[in-house]
Image (cartoon, rainbow, N blue to C red; front, top):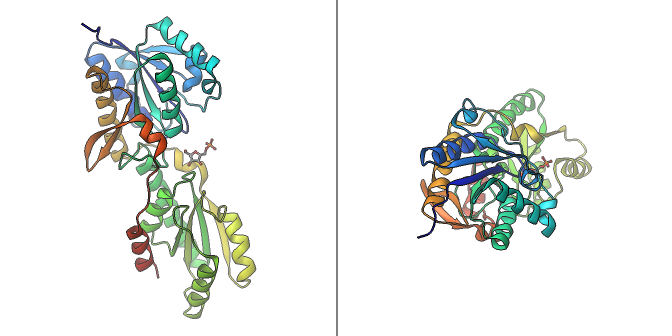
Length: 327
Ligand code: F6P
């Protein structure tokens, strides 16, 4: 009979996202509940390569569910993407007797897990932790809801000042090459235009729309632009618009890393807790090399290599909603 896994490692990798701590807490407490030893690997894959691995107890994760960031710290480790780095990482896991890994991160982190698992036969389970929501196979990622709400709060404030001055604001939000933060924050703040990488916007159409707005004295406008949009971000778009519409009173606001910090929302704490619990269950049930998602409010399991290959797509219907609601 195969020996049950009793020692697991957990790490956070890539950009941090609010709710990662809630996920770590769930993994640690569920693992301990099932009689496992749980090890925290510091600074993502770097801690595996450099042997920064610590045993976590139930009290190690007390009072963290409400905190942003990650108590395990995180990094984007280049060494892990070399065969030598991964060999060192494997040897360090062996030193601690760690038999399986739970990786909380984005698709880049899952890619590392997939390679490592294939090479050294270490079972891996992924939890989607990224504000970008750019992973196919789950309706939500840990941190997205908080990030979007942070953006919404900021854009609402920007609209107050835009309104006071009759100005156009271009607000840039994060998302890397995905437009979900822009789409959700834009819709929920009534942005007049939402520019995302998934949908090409013609410059001529944008300019035409502002000329038309000017005619009917609609001077308070907000463009929410995803950092990965084809225009090249808010500054580039501002240059272009100022050239074409010299009279326009325009300001740029780049929200940046505030979107990554702060206390996780209730929604992120709940999905992180559910996902963390199910990740340990996966290991017990030997459902390996999958990542946990939430689809239609049910826990889903997707082969980790599919998260690497696929991206979420934004349907035409979303864009139609934006067009109809923002005039
Ligand atoms: O993937 C999360 C994210 O915040 C992206 O939205 C953004 O493009 C990137 O990370 C920023 O990375 P860094 O913190 O390394 O500048």
